[in-house]
Amino acid sequence: MSKSVLVINCGSSSIKFALLLEDQKFRIHGLAENLGTPEARIKGVTVGNEPVDIHIPNADHKEALEVGLSRLANYKPDAIGHRVVHGGNITKAELITPEIIEKIREATPLAPLHNPAHLIGIEATQRLFPDLPQVAVFDTAFHQTMPSHAYRYALPKFLYTEHGVRRYGFHGTSHAYVSDRGSELAGSFRQGGWLTAHLGNGSSTCAIWNGESVDTSMGLTPLEGVVMGTRSGDVDPSIHSFLANNLGWDIYKIDKMLNSQSGLLGLSDLSNDMRTLIEASEQGNEDATLAIEVFCYRLAKSLAGLSCGLPEINGLFFTGGIGENSAYIREKTLNYLPHFGFKLSKEKNNELKRGTEGRIDQGTGPQIWVVPTDEEGRIAQETKHVAFHEFENNDATTQAIESV
Ligand code: AMP
Figure (tube, rainbow, N blue to C red):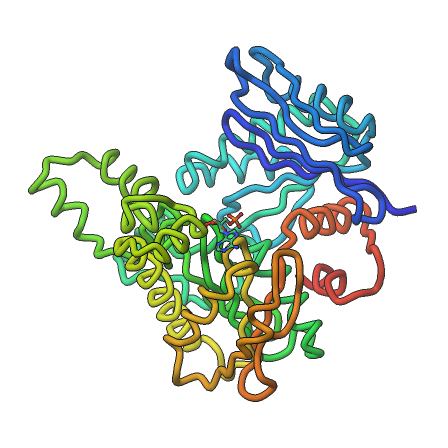
């Protein structure tokens, strides 16, 4: 019989968790937040679809998971899959062992906010479920197939060889899922060249050749690349010395500005939320209009740049909150790519809403698809594969995971 998997995405004071029951279609979601403070609470929906909001003052990660699972589902999972942002040079999902924990710890300088929080989550679930297999699924792993000319920066060699300074890429679980699913829908599973645009609060693009990542927009950290909700994406690195010399800013202030006060929020001075900006733009807000324009232009520029990694382009997949929902952003972005032969069907583009997958081109030129991402589902499948060598069925995604 198929197994159920608890998927954990652990932050320093929060845990997003999802229990995917046997056939993966039935899921229970929970969010524990403000952990370690008097305001700690768990929100979620039970198996019976009842909303739950439980106050758990000062609870830690372990206690929150214990309470959450017993109140939401009363199920014991068969395995646990942890989303881990940075795996350094690890190339695939791995069973969590002391060696893997050490590798996650070693990658901490590259993801100082995320990896320590993941380790707290792993420790908590190991104490809670000492007998269950636990698997780490890394955001960076899918991009380990990038060639060195795509992942190296033009910086002194020792920074790479001694300190691991290179491009790693992120959102790998999403790009892997979407390109597998999309190419399967297109009838050319893991064949040819595809571009993916994962557009959410964090956004990134990826070039995939025969099912493998050959380049991506994010780099050493998830700051590089396209414009995001609050992250700047690419800027001239001399901005650091400019701000330090002229405004007296220290490195922490500059880092915070680039990560949390920039992107759509910085440009619009209004919001990091694309829906809000589209509404404001419709009402004549010029800053919102500009923020949307910069977002689409730079996204198109990124996709055009990544196309250099592909011998040919079969098509483009849109995903993420913005990519799945906004026909407006999809159309605007494609208008900035006039040389690639994309022929958007306005009618099909306007029909697609969240959760729907479908093709939105006119049937000539490179294909254009909307493919809702499923990072949880992919993490659960990779977890089952690593823990039990189990496949749900014989479909494309499972074949892909086998060969990751
Ligand atoms: P995610 O991080 O993938 O959940 O995506 C969040 C982003 O998706 C936010 O910027 C939302 O404003 C955006 N979003 C969700 N629905 C829509 C929509 N109908 N139109 C435009 N943006 C949307």
